[in-house]
Length: 196
Image (cartoon, rainbow, N blue to C red):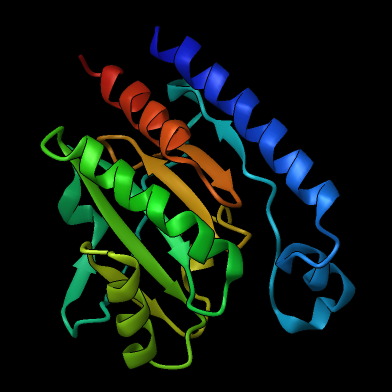
């Protein structure tokens, strides 16, 4: 049943994003295509699920957070972890933000942790203010240099991107582009169910 729900969500997301991309030549994605040197890479919201037997080694994401603390996903082993890459200058990230907050609320208490990557932000202060405005209550690693692309095994190649890590810290699924609440919750539930 969760797989069927996820498949339906994926189809709806693909249709919605496809229509939106075709109907708005002034969108951030279209502007980025016209100016590839701006540093923005668009994603279409497609999800790639990785079967447990095909997953690589656990990711090693760690770093200083926007609030001055430190975070390592290795400390979250045993939980399903949602890793979302975002930036204040990313238009699709702003549109995605309410969906992330809803998914966070829906999966609270289910052995799930959310972690952000504040990507190529001008300053921690800017990232912290934007995260607070969007309602992000989870920690975000500050990544001015873009080094998290290596930490996340090169799988998070657009802004925004979202990866779901299984309980062993391996990438179970990746969404390139904005994710919807339904798609994200479905992917999290599917990953949780693997160990039930």
